[in-house]
Figure 1 (cartoon, rainbow, N blue to C red):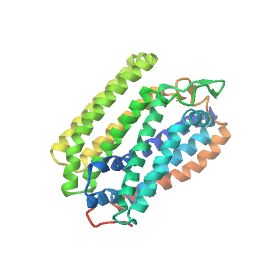
Figure 2 (figure 1 turned 45 degrees about the vertical axis):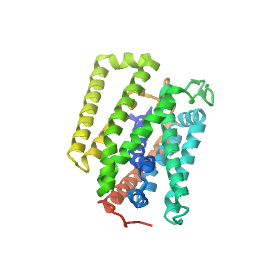
Figure 3 (figure 1 turned 30 degrees about the horizontal axis):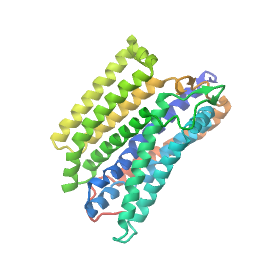
Figure 4 (figure 1 turned 120 degrees about the vertical axis):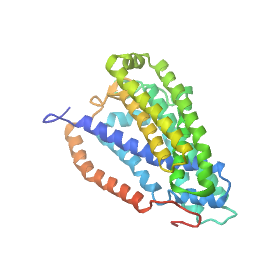
Length: 338
């Protein structure tokens, strides 16, 4: 459990959950731009879209590396089982991130005649990475069978309707993050187009959340029973009310032509969904049966890694906030960082 009354597994669980949340939020709007790219035919506007994240996109992915490294160090059983169960979608996700990253750098250096190839790499990489992440989440929520601390399923268990629908849902969520991010960072015709796209994306996302939520309760009747208990029911009702208020705020500020508030409300929606997911699987790190304590590495290993993490995390946070502060403000046609 811990050293001198400190629950190291709980601390590491919070750190990993925080790192994954930061990745989903910060790389979400980044990937969302690639998903929205086909809807913007103008080359100059596409340049502006990429320039809104060009200074920060690689830093956003630091959180993914942190989450993976922390999982390996603190919960090696979970690391091994989850990777074995989800090797293929995780590899596809990495391939998508590679294509997207390469497109960032080479698109600005290519000739106008060949730039469309890098546009396609950016679009395809963003879609592949996002869809694969959604499939991973869906397969994770569906449950990973473990027998005698070994993965007991098949390599294609993730290829099922529920994870695939979750993949589509995450594509919609990241597209909404991307469109509201561009409301903050752009102006003129591009901002107007994003304002036009944001409302249907928000409504479509709410429909997907409802479908996935009901489907999840059907897959896990024990989860429905858990959320219906008095204490959990109050939390669940609170999350639903806050989500509805966030949707209302998003649509209202969109009509009032605010630039920043729609993005803030979208972040709140993502955060509420993430909290709901975390509470649903808690205290398991491999749903539905392996807890964080059962999957933990020895306390001495967790403590050693935690000392390093306590130095690294503040540095990453300071770098992240500083980079967004330095590159704040609107991006206009002709601006660039390459």
